Amino acid sequence: QVQLVESGGGLVQPGGSLRLSCTASGSIFRINSMAWYRQVPGKERELVARIVTGGSTDYADSVKGRFNISRDNAGNTVYLQMNSLKPEDTAVYCCRSRIRTIRGVESAYWGQGTQVTVSS
Image (cartoon, rainbow, N blue to C red; front, side, top):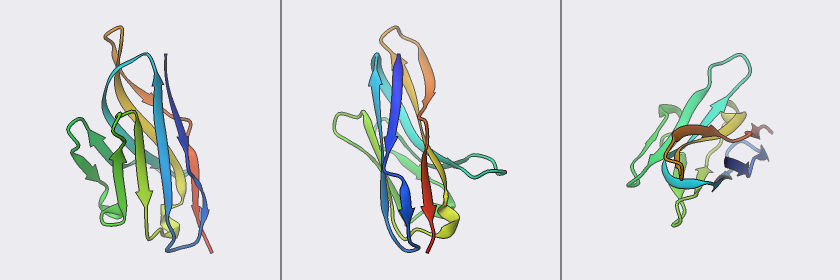
């Protein structure tokens, strides 16, 4: 059993910052990648940022230069530092991770999502 638990969402004014966290726990053998997606009602879910084993990252064009994804030393927690936030960043942000369990099965897991609202 694997769980992803997110935290850090909330209401922030335009130009402000938030940091999201996502921690994976359970029967984990190896975490291969961790990523943040966001979704707005009526729109497709969008990949915001991803970090893979080895530390390589990639970002959606809309957040490059403003958002930064990182992992802690243990590798089980991923962070999304969001700066210079805009109203169009408002969305539910979900953590996703590809994890190989101790039983040798690799699957994608999702967190429950955290709301980010950018508004004055």
